[in-house]
Length: 355
Ligand SMILES: *Cc1c(COP(=O)(O)O)cnc(C)c1O
Image (cartoon, rainbow, N blue to C red; front, top):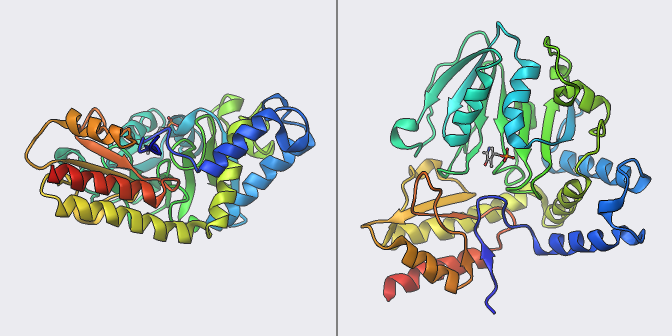
């Protein structure tokens, strides 16, 4: 059988050695004789594993001492609400950038909690670029960005300078490149794009933003409570955190985010070069803003999309259908997509052209 390459946008491909370790842990966790799924989150091996995962996050992104690393639930989507609920007071203003479908959802949620100023939008051109010139509020608390727009395939290659500080949804490009955490008040990411299974959400938050809420928050939505309890206020998603742990070990062995970034640039270039070269295909995205993680492309002169998708599936190249809102094709080539997978896709595109 052909090797299967999964180009899904999320939940997405994970490194094969990580999947093997996860499978083993389900049967017998580290020789303890029972499954990780059966172990108390208060048991020493699990408390140690969660602490180690925090340290791995810290090492991978050089997280400074004045930040807390939290493992929460509710997905990136809950952070859309939880962040303004905790750090934006009713009479304060936050600036938001509208660069895609997720960014638009973030804005909608934030509007419930304070003054939300949408400082730019690329919606008019179906989000095919990242706006560069825009004014920010003088009294801004923070500027929210979606660092990588999973659906449309754009990415902030350079982060804007915020009047206050940046808050970023990095769900689909966290650990894909180095970032200077100091520029950010909060970084958050649902795990299922680049680091693990759905069920755990990584939050990296500057300490002075914790405990700032003026609202009477439910305990589960209060950063202060989760920070105080080291993400063990209630039962955390232990297995999901374990998979993140193994993914971060894998990343470290490959040389960390810097080496990963180089590999991601290499993989994306292979694919974008073929899209440019091959007269059958084109990219709808402005060249300078193209994502290294999600690569949408369409037929240059129309054609039977299902036919190409079937052609790819026969070659083990799966989940290449574009998002329902944009059509065409989308190859998500996250950290765990091996370069061989991208090469196989490029070769299928060539052969499709030649036949
Ligand atoms: C997938 C995705 C989300 C939604 O994440 P959930 O964990 O399902 O809430 C949010 N933002 C971006 C950029 C995404 O790619």
